[in-house]
Length: 150
Image 1 (cartoon, helix red, strand yellow):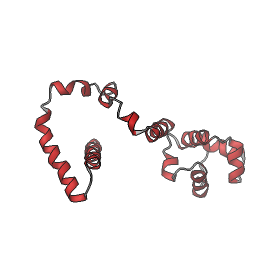
Image 2 (cartoon, rainbow, N blue to C red; image 1 turned 60 degrees about the vertical axis):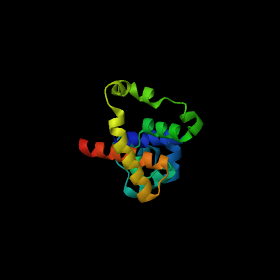
Image 3 (cartoon, rainbow, N blue to C red; image 1 turned 30 degrees about the horizontal axis):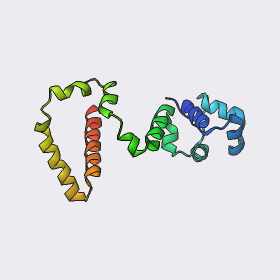
């Protein structure tokens, strides 16, 4: 996504008009328009002011994606008791059908022992509770996957 599109989406998400942003930054509305249409780029100082105005880090502003932001906000607002009622495997299997079928093909207990050892190791070495160790292990797998794709 272009920087202009990111700036536009961040502004809209924050509820500001181009005029309001221009006034807060001490520039013209046309300048804001040019930034949002990728005609020109804000300098680093103006970009920093925009990130502060939109309550985003500079990195998040540059890569702002409204869909990702909305998903993150929904996750943050979802209570644990509601989250526990969601069949995550069923939900994710709509995007990744293998999640609906692998249980019939894979010997889960064959992998369970190895994963249990890894969980126990995380708990022992870092003092994590059961849930935190599980979440860290899940995240480690995501990092490994991401590194393999690169």
